[in-house]
Length: 184
Image (cartoon, rainbow, N blue to C red; front, side, top):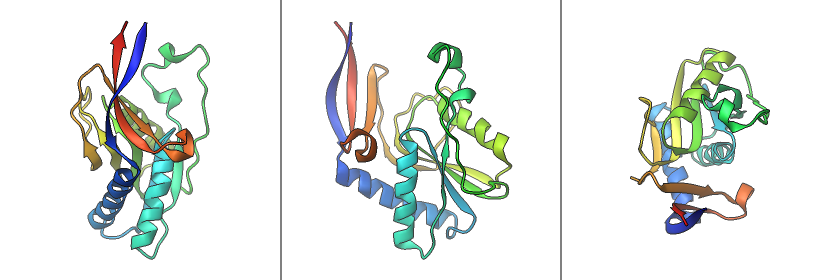
C-alpha cells in the first residue's frame, strides 16, 4: 500500500501571494505592458492562478488581462491509461487567440508533458503571436525540452516526492507542500 506523508511546507498563503505578485510584475516588464496579452489557465489549478495573476496585473497596470480556461485531456499522451472514457471539461477562451501573446499558467512544471499537450491544444485553436509559460513551482525532472518563462519557486525534488499545490478556491486551504510517497 502506498501512503503520502507531508514533509515540508514550501509556501504558505503569503508566499503564494508574493510569488504571484512578482510573476505579474515580470509579465508586464517582459511584454512592455499588457496589450494583446491573454492569460490561459490549464485545468485545474492553473485556472485560479491565472485569474489571480490577472487581478495582480490589474493592481499594477490600468488594464484588465482577459483569462481563459484550457482543458488538455484529449491532448495527453497517457490518455489511454487515464480512464476508458476520460472526463473532458470545457475549454473557454475570452477571444480569438490569433496574433495574441498567450501566458499559459499552471501550478507545477514537472516532466513537461502537460505543457506539450497544452501547446498542441492552443495551436489547434488559433495561431498566437507567442506563448509564454508561468508556473508557481518548477520541480525539475523534465522529459521534454520545455522551460518556464516565469517561475514562482524552483524546487529540486526527488522522484518519490510529490508537490501538492492547495488553493483556497479548490481545496479550502492555501499552501504548497512536498509529500513523499512511501510504500508500506
